[in-house]
Length: 189
Ligand SMILES: [Fe+2]
Ligand SMILES: [Fe+2]
Figure 1 (cartoon, rainbow, N blue to C red):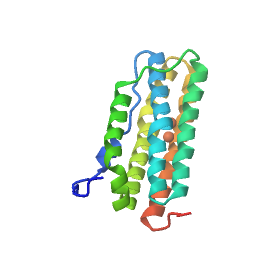
Figure 2: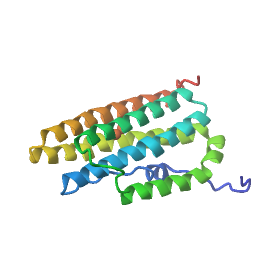
Figure 3: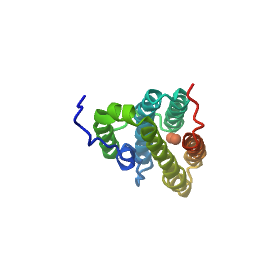
């Protein structure tokens, strides 16, 4: 712990850099791999870390919400794996690796910052979670779905549509948690 370090500041942009975007490829299998890689990253790394922050900030219910969403991101990967049963460990996407590195950088200062300004960190994490979910729900995964539809692959399109619906739900849950936090109604037990 560095008592003299009064420069620590974790911005929303820094937290947003922990988001890895899945990428659409010409090969539907590659698209599926990138999807699984990103969803499993959110399940194993990003949302568990946000849950840890919420827990430390004194918001166990919000921590549970992050863990619940983490579990659903895992499910999204499972749904797609059922269609592409030969996806083992997907190759680590460049964007996912970049996101993991960003998260590790943040972790170095995070615990100090949560002690100084718990609500500030949690508020930023929620804003980032909302933009992540919104981007997946309204841009990234609809394009994945449309590509599958263009190829006549209804089964894959159906999975991406289920994911779009689920990410929309995540966005709404986080929006409501943010408004609870901002109005001082966030449950502390
Ligand atoms: Fe997801
Ligand atoms: Fe999600």
